[in-house]
Image (cartoon, rainbow, N blue to C red; front, side, top):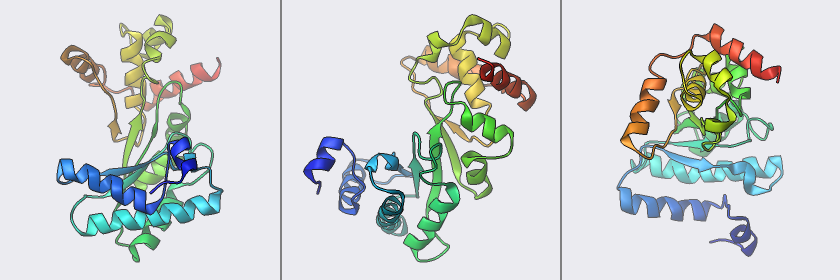
Length: 223
């Protein structure tokens, strides 16, 4: 299924590999609501070849979706939107080609949204960027790594946390800023204990208004 180079790279967009991996997951789950194609920008292909391979992977996932085995699929990227490797309209076009019609099953996009990966927030505040485009197209939007792998618990200063929300701890304030991003539907977060999970829910219960969020991004832009 994989070439030695793909094994060494730890990444593949080969349709046969996508089919095999999806079948393995479904053998355990029975059905999946959403399957993400993760980090296609890691394929080390040029832009045209990457888009062609993405379309072929989408075609495989369209088969699973039309057969009722998955609800739909999405693209989860770390840097693809940021570096212009692909854009939401291009992904929609590839999905339509894969489906052979406008009735495709591309349902979501995912990208990092945090006080470190802040560009999606600043773009969304201006009514631009992948999150805004995806929401306008009816796609679900997911924000990954809101605490930047846990680093923001120590990277964010108490002064910044207080500026974001009075009395908030750095981790809670950082999570709140990410969750307040316009056009963001879902924030992906893991918690090691029920206490941490409840603290996270409490932290984002009252999102920042866009004006306050813009003040936060302005402060960070000043260094």
